[in-house]
Amino acid sequence: MGYIEPAPIKDKENPLDSMMSRFDEATRLLGITEEMYNILKIPAKQVVVGLPVTLDNGKIKVFEGYRVIHSNILGPAKGGIRFAPDVNIDEVKALAAWMTWKCAVVDIPYGGAKGGVACNPREMSEGELERLMRAYTNAMLSVFGPDRDIPAPDMGTGQREMAWLMDEYSKAHGMTIHAVVTGKPVVLGGSLGRLEATGRGVMVCALAGMERLKINPYKSTCAVQGFGNVGSFAAKLLHERGVKIIAISDISGGYHNDKGIDIDEAMQYIAKNSGTLEGYKGAEKISNEELLTLKADVLVPAAKEDVIDEEIAHKMQCKLIVEGANGPTSAKADPIINEKGILAVPDILANAGGVTVSYFEWVQNRLGYKWTQERVNRRSDRIMKEAFDKVYETMKQYNVSMRIAAYIVAIDKVAKTYQYRGGY
Ligand code: GLU
Image (cartoon, rainbow, N blue to C red; front, side, top):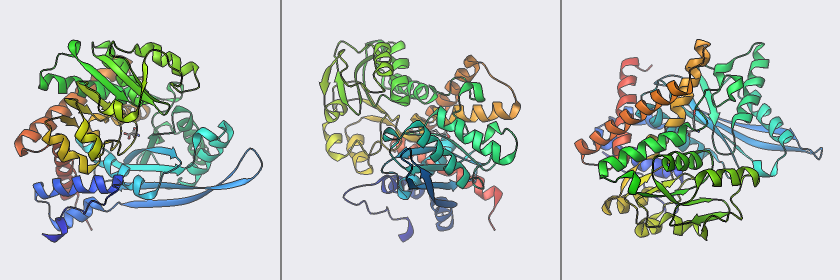
C-alpha cells in the first residue's frame, strides 16, 4: 500500500516529519483505509495573515500570523498560540495535529488546532505585544469562537495575552464571551489549577510510569529540561512527592546538584531574576546535552521540539522519559530509545493535563460557575491516570512503544467518530 509507506525522514527532521512518521506507523498498524488516512492527515483549515503593528518607535512592522485547524471531527478545535521568532506554517501544522491526537487520547470533546505569530516576545514591550495580540485576534474573528475554535497559551504567551484576546473578541461581538479562550487569569474566568495543569499531568504520568517500572519515587532522581510553566511545576510537584530533582535548565543553561535542587527556591529565584536562572547558585552549571544524558531515573524534557536526536538518544542513561514539551524527541531517536528499554511517555499523553484543564475552564465558563481547585485537580488526575493506563494496555496489546500506542488510541477514536458523522 504505497500511500501508507512511512514518510521519508530527512536528515534534519522538522516536527511535521516527526509527527507524520509516527502517524504513518500507527495508521498502518490500525489498517486505516486510504480515504480515512487522507481525512486524518490533511488539515481542515489553514489561515495565514499579515499583521501590521505600530511599534513603540512609531514605525509599522508587519508580523506573519498563523492558525491551523487540523481537525474538528471530535468537536470545536482547541489549541494554543505560540509567539516565537522561528514559528512557521509547518511547525504550526504539526502542533495542530498533535492537539487532535492529544484531545483524543484524554477523551475530551475537541478537535485540534494551533496558532502562532513569528515574533520575539522577549524583545517586545508590553504595549507592542498587546497591539500584536489584538491585531491577531481581529484577523481571526471568523476563525475563533466558543463552538468553533478555542485558543489557549503556548510558548511565549500566557494569561496576559489570553485576557487581551478575550477582551478584543468580546468587544467585536458587543458582549463578554469568556469561553472563546482558555488559560485566562482566574479573575477573568480562568480556571483554578490551569496554570500548573500541564506540569501536574506530567507528574501524574511520571508517577504512573515509575509504578510500572517499580521505581520508588522516594528513592528516585529526575532531571527536568526547561523551567517554564511546564517544567517548573512538574519539578515542584514531583519534588513534593519525594522525587529528588537533580537538574533543571532554561535558556541560560543547565544546573546540576546530585544532592537535589530546592525547587521552591529556584522558582523564587527566577521570579526575582527577570525570568531566568542565570547566576543561580544552588547547583553547578552543565550543558543542555549533559542534562539530557545525566544518570537520573526520570527525564522530563519540557522545553521545545527535537531536543532528543539520535546522538543524544545513544548517550541517554534514564529509565523513564516523560515528555512535557510537544515533540521533544525526533522520530529517528525513537528506535534507539526503545532498544535501550527506556519507557517514553509521549507528549500527546504526558502534556495533555493542560488541555484537560482548559476543557474544564471552558465547561465552567459555559456553566457560569466556578469549581474548586480540589475538584479540578481530582478530575484532571483521574483523566490523566485513565489515559495513561489505556495507552499502556494498548502498548502491550500491539507490542509497540507507548508513543505509537498513544497514536493508535487517538487515531482509532477520531476515525471511528468520523465514520459515525460521515462525510459529504
Ligand atoms: N498549548 C497547550 C498544549 O500544547 C495547551 C493547549 C490548550 O489548553 O488548548 O497542549
